Amino acid sequence: EEQVVESGGGLVQPGGSLRLSCAASGFTVSGNYMTWVRQAPGKGLEWVSVIHGGGGTYYANSVKGRFTISRDNSKNMVYLQMNTLRGEDTAVYYCAREMIVATTRSGAFDIWGQGTRVTVSS
Amino acid sequence: EIVLTQSPGTLSLSPGERATLSCRASQSVSSNYLAWYQQKPGQAPRLLIYVASNRATGIPDRFSGTGSWTDFTLTITRLEPEDSAVYYCQQYGSSPTFGQGTKVEI
Image 1: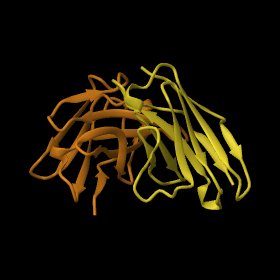
Image 2 (image 1 turned 180 degrees about the vertical axis):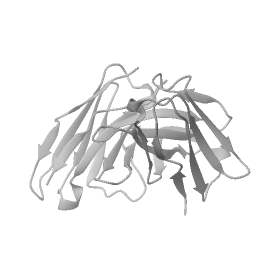
Image 3 (image 1 turned 60 degrees about the vertical axis):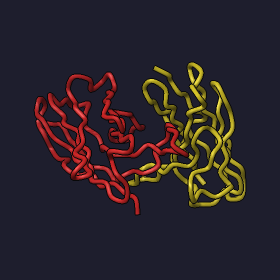
Image 4 (image 1 turned 90 degrees about the vertical axis):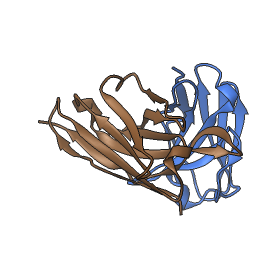
């Protein structure tokens, strides 16, 4: 079964750091486009970052320069290093896989984890 | 950045009725990279439709997507109580964005 499981969330003070982890099973992260999406309490979904199969990384303007996405192919894991955290970063963070259809990107996310909650507060 | 505007904000319908959800983009969505998701309270989003009109694996044919360029529609026929959820559209251009969601109450 293809699935992802996030971990690493918690309570952190403004200005602090946190690293989220996403463990994939049933498929390889190196062969896929892996994304982080977040959802603030009572709000909608916001795309945060993506790491391409080739290793390229992209970020939402709201987190650029503060967050870093990476992966460890040997562990089949994806990470999101979050620095200089702000109150507006408080959210549930989801790891998701972009669906590939017949070797072509679909732009849609078919595998989602259950999310990990990040709270930024003093 | 492409802004997606969903309407209506809330839809209240009865079992067996049809729901029509709209998603309008501020500019053309490249390659019709438009997806729809269903999210129930406390759960992760679930992919329903990709590339505007393709049903994801395991999604019943009561769910259908249409549209192109800037106007997209998700239609749910023969509504069931389990369809109560928030539905989001999402585009994948240079920077993916989501609509603000439509809440469907059955």
